Length: 107
Image 1 (tube, helix red, strand yellow):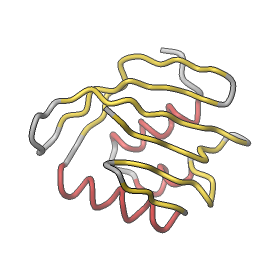
Image 2: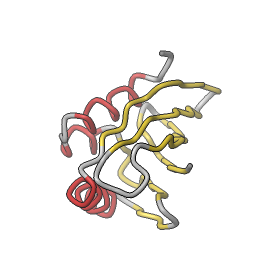
Image 3: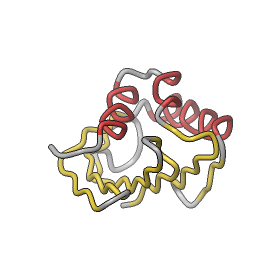
């Protein structure tokens, strides 16, 4: 699957529950939008990610990816302890200087 290496690193760290490595994929000012909430900056993103992992024990498995310049769209099968599991979600990444500056997760 054709994914930028930083996005591949993000999913790999996520699957290993490795918060430190996952955060290394992000720019300091990175923003994540998920479930109608915005998490801005490394501290807020770390809190969001840890809470989501604890609450749902989810696993995201990329199934397809498209890249257009600094944008990468990844469809992933997400399963875990939540109603309707598994679901297909789109992860829309924006990359700048080999770091993720924005991630929007949507159905």
